[in-house]
Length: 158
Length: 63
Image 1 (cartoon, rainbow over the protein chains, first blue to last red):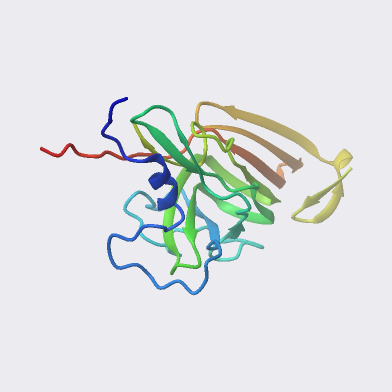
Image 2 (tube, rainbow over the protein chains, first blue to last red):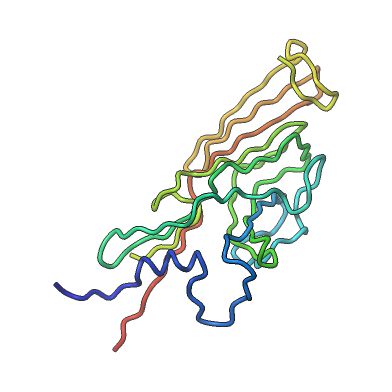
């Protein structure tokens, strides 16, 4: 046997569930999962890694679209998997498609921001896709497979 | 089949249907449009995400 420098894969998964606190953390009123939402943004918006929270600036507007977007279904807790003695991945994927029903979004959009509506709308991730408009129709975002290599959110060490 | 349009429900026999696919490493997207003469009266899209942001973490050596 030998020891191997590494970040523990269990820690990666625990980052996703707020188990560790190296600084000043928000006070949690509950031990249940937070609520997450998905908001759509115009192709002209500036939503990226520097985005810290949901913003209405650059968000789509249109018939049957509510500012802030829709709730992201979260029925599957984050998971983690070791791939070697030095590497592992923690991952999470919404458990259902994100669907905007019977909307009219006439100005082109290409981005969804996932954010935590329980924790002051803090930003989680930004996902881009081909430019779209919707006319009296549905816009559905189907998630990738929830695995260590394809999940929507992945934290990894190598 | 009835289609939801900007003019309410319309029979698809009255409309021209257009469909498309975007297939790349980021997404598989399908879209469908219904046109009444030169007017777009319905458009839906379905994006299946294939890739996503990937965050890599590192641990530093001591000594």
